[in-house]
Every structure is written in structure tokens, then in C-alpha cells.
Image 1 (cartoon, rainbow, N blue to C red):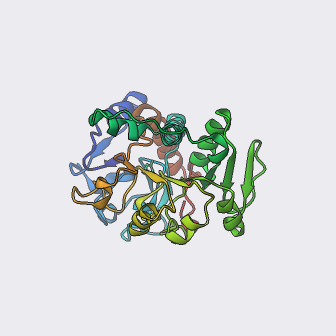
Image 2: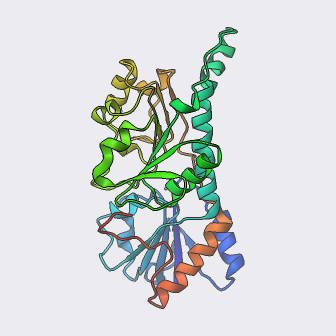
Length: 308
Ligand code: GLV
């Protein structure tokens, strides 16, 4: 039996070493070098080539190498009976929370504007966006969303959340699925930490931006496909949004001729908000590998119907 790691463009050596440190008897293959495809029972995949997972007839389970699983759900070669899991580690949650906090602070303190001004040797002051005009609203209140909420609450922000069902959680105002309009009407800084599903694809559009309280700002740390990119340009150019901070894009890497690069009010980071730590990942992967062999439910297992 072997465990296969598939993540092109990622150095998988540290992860395979961490796995072998925990369990020296483990057979680990790093795609595309697979000794015997019939022996592969478990795979760990990230941005894998489409439909490659269908090549392993004895595959029982697949873990994402991150929190998102849209790349697994989109793989039509994966039989229904193959179980799926996502990877949630403490550092992934902390990184995401810190990433969002710094984006909120940078927006309020005009950090990117001052960076641009420094380049031009230009001295100009801008008014700090007050906290009362910085009510945050988190779309998606799962593992990532709740971690973001905790850190923002700790920093004195008023936090709204939007999720399938209303949550009883200290320090937040929770809105359920059918209360999206009220949630938006009470939110200045909209943060997307949603999973990508048929329902959430394209949710960040002009109609939604218009419902936000002014001044309004967008932080997208979900998936690029949540956002209608041309609507964002229009919303920023017409003042519906004061700006946006994006970590994810419809096409990654973001093409060098993309309009976003030339917009000073759009901050861009290259999908680094939360990056899986190999040591932490290894423990969860081994746990799930063992569980999958004995037919037990995996940790952070994915409900294919829900899409996360
Ligand atoms: C990152 O995008 C992740 O899904 O972990």
C-alpha cells in the first residue's frame, strides 16, 4: 500500500520527509514518479492535473493539501466511493486570521497608498478610516471564518457573520442564509472565506457590493471564482467600493496583462493567505491514511453534496 503526493509546482520533499519521520514504514510516492499504481490507496492532492486521480484503481481516499477542496470535487475521474478530506491545521487558521487582520489594518491606515507615495517621494496625509466605519462581515463561518472572527473581535472590531444557519457564538452578530441583505447592509469590510460551491460561485458581484454600508471594502481570501472580476473593477471605478484586497484569482498566476495590476486600489497577493505547514499536515494525513484503511470516518471529512 502506498500514499501518493500530487502537487505540481510545490516542493513535496519536506512533506514526504515529515510523513516518513512519523511512520518509517510508510511507502510514499511523489507524482509523477509512482512505483506501482495499483498499490496507491491514499492520495494527497493540490492543483493536480485534471482527472489524474482516476489512474489509481485501488484509491480509497484523497486529502486536499489545503482547506479548499474544489479541485477534488471538480475531478470527474474520482469515483463516488473515494472518500475526501480537507486539511485544517492550527497554523493554517492562525495565518488566515493574521492575513485578514493585516488587510483590514492596511485598508484603514492607507498602507498601500503610503507605499505608492514613498516610491514617488510624495508627502500627503490621509484620514484614518475610523473603527465605526470598519464593521467587518465574514462570508462563511467555518474553520477559517471563525478563526478570522476571533482575532478581529480581540482587536476590537464589530463582527458580523453570514452562514447557512444562525450561529450562537460570543462576540458576533450572526446572520443566516436568508438574511444576506441585512448582513450586507450592516457591513463595511466584506471578507470572503467561503468554500467554492455551485451556490457560492460568483457571489461577489456588483449587486452585492451595492448593498454594503459605505465606505465599503472587499477582502477575498476564498477562491477567485467567488468574484465577478469585471464587477469589481466597475464597483471601484464608480466608488461603490473604496478598494479591494485579493489573494485569489480566477486564473492563477494572475496574468501579467490583467487589469487588476494597474489599479492602485486593488492589492494583490499571490494566494499565500494561509499555506499548509508540512509537519502539521503530516500528522493529519497519517491519521486519515490509517482511518481510511480501517474504514473509519476521516478527520475533516468532506460532504460531497455540500461541497465542503
Ligand atoms: C488555500 O487556498 C487552501 O484552501 O488551503
